[in-house]
Length: 252
Image (cartoon, rainbow, N blue to C red; front, side, top):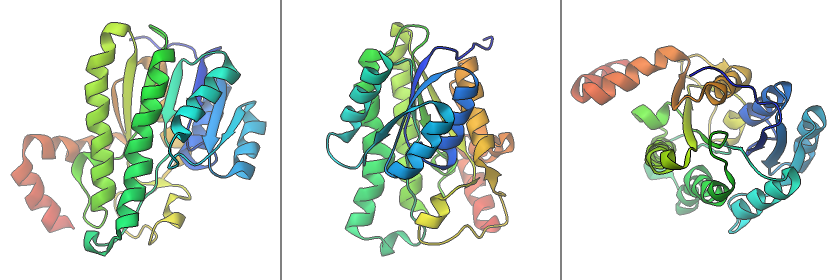
């Protein structure tokens, strides 16, 4: 599929106050998209909005009703909606058995429930041909990462949701994209239990992830893994699960 321009398209981006969301807002704005950005940090959100001419939608997506209010506000401010980039997410590192009930619920609420509620609210507004849902998942959701078991599970749920919605929405001419980044250098690691300490894969920039999201939207791609080489472990796991488990145990 040939690349299209984003000029004039109306996009809502969650998790837009920093990291991948902020970088995506800048990338979309550079291509002429009209933006509404959502996030919990109102001050940081305003800075991104000032640089991208975006509408600010502060709020906590974990709160009941906030996802729908966010979409309604975006539609009202932009006069409709063509693209939703569901990017908001949080992590947790450590043994699964050490998680509290609140930890489990919070990750589920932000990483999966909110994404589903946002999509449900956005779908009626998305237009044939120009409409697209974009879910920002993780390579962890494709392979499962020890020490991030529940985070991996929530992102795997997002992957499954994207697959199912892609088939459901195809007759309506609405596309669904899943972008699965590797390890991205963002404030995400400052908010989880521990910093990133593995040697591989190496940290990538938020801009690289944002460029992958932008390219996927412009080209109408369904699945994108960034960096590209991380498709290899995902494919090995899908096709040769026993071999993958042996390799993962040896390299862990």
